[in-house]
Image (tube, rainbow, N blue to C red):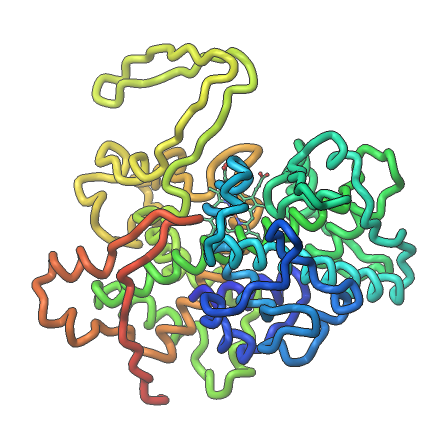
Length: 447
Ligand code: HEM
């Protein structure tokens, strides 16, 4: 699922069509050699000449000259090494430990940075050909970098490189959010611009303009999008598969809807869905994706810091009594998404059950919008929520249309509660990880 979600986000968001074959080497990330290093053990960035062609190469399963990792393994290794990367930033001495894992994660980040720089250069050249006039992507320090936003100073590095994914300058997300949340952005030639081009255009703003996205922010934000766009979706889909294998009734209902919406599917090219016509009909798929995220929200807890003194208004659910909670400026507030999603007061006595129908409103029932926040709520909520939901609906529908999602023989031998315990097991990573979601896919006979 990780590979599939990554394939979709790179294609849809970044216009990079990575062939599935590129993923066959992704498992090599754990054994790949570390890049050549400088005297203090910092991996050398690949030669700049390799950069521009790195992601344009037709065979993405091989590292281009100057790189040790192909693109996909570099990205996966960076994602999986994110906690170590944060530790290295917090405690710089950790980065100097002579551990293979430290070298590997540093290599992954150094090479991924060059891959992203290459993607920027290639796309910038495409935009130039379309009539857009860019400045050269400067390798010099940006305003934000000079202001200390995420710079890591290496002992022997003349030009400290900021870390990927670690320097979201204030306002960056919101600025992109406005464009991403439905603005009809047009490219230079009047065509609909993709997400990546929007980022590059923001980077092309004149120096000093409030809207300008610095080079570091551009690379960092690209990484955040790739990361936010695939790890969350991939694990949600993995949980959905486990839940569908455990709940044949739900799977049958989902399949009935998919068969009705795509009745004549014969060849893969028939699978191209029409957004306007087909998507509104995939109601059960949407409810199934939502219900999966209710039970397994990718981000189980969210942390916020109060920007100013404020007061929250609470309600005792059993009595309706109101009370005030003073929140002084600087307070760290934890939003326990998982707890809210499983409260019987909001979701009823069967809150722990997998029942997509609870997302269907009726005359006397409206599902509780305020008690559902897998994408967070408000101004800084997920800008990819609609995209992720559509992606989930389409993948689940096509999956059950093509396959029966079954229990493995080992699981069939176990009592129901034990199956659930094992198949729905999880651990906390960048997003909640579906560690036990192993299912058997049986090809359905063509009708
Ligand atoms: C099932 C899939 C997804 C889930 C559950 C999810 C969840 C979230 C959550 C909870 C936040 C708020 C984080 C916080 O407040 O600390 C968030 C923010 C964000 N998400 Fe997602 N996300 C998903 C998919 C995506 C996709 C597909 C993209 C991009 C295409 C994306 C891009 C972002 C970005 C850029 C932000 C930061 C927004 C800002 O700070 O203004 N997400 N996401």
